[in-house]
Length: 141
Image 1 (cartoon, rainbow, N blue to C red):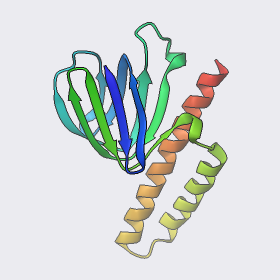
Image 2 (cartoon, rainbow, N blue to C red):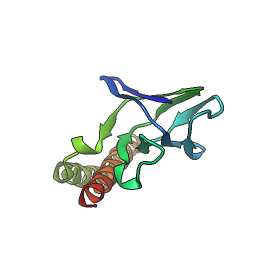
Image 3 (tube, rainbow, N blue to C red):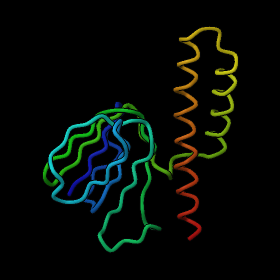
Image 4 (tube, one colour):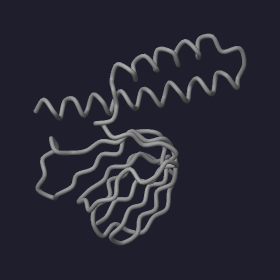
């Protein structure tokens, strides 16, 4: 089956895969070939991609995503999100610094709007750090 991961800036991933695990508003779902058709909302989190049935978990790819829409049809998964970052593209030190700034913004928020924006930034950078950690562990194996 084919996974298409599309962001506002273009296509991030468009390849044949065996399995994808996707964070949705109703919980994480695993999608295998011949999955039932489904349209659901993605939430910010980690997409895990296994390209081949016989591949080891050490070969999985990871993407940090923002919320969006997931459409599953026979032979194809489309994930449309604002942002998606592959583990190779995340610099841990930069993401940690961004998380620290977001935490400061949260702590200094003067109203609900600022607080909500800060929470969104905290969530985004925590997911990016999780993907960077998963990617680093995979490379060590």
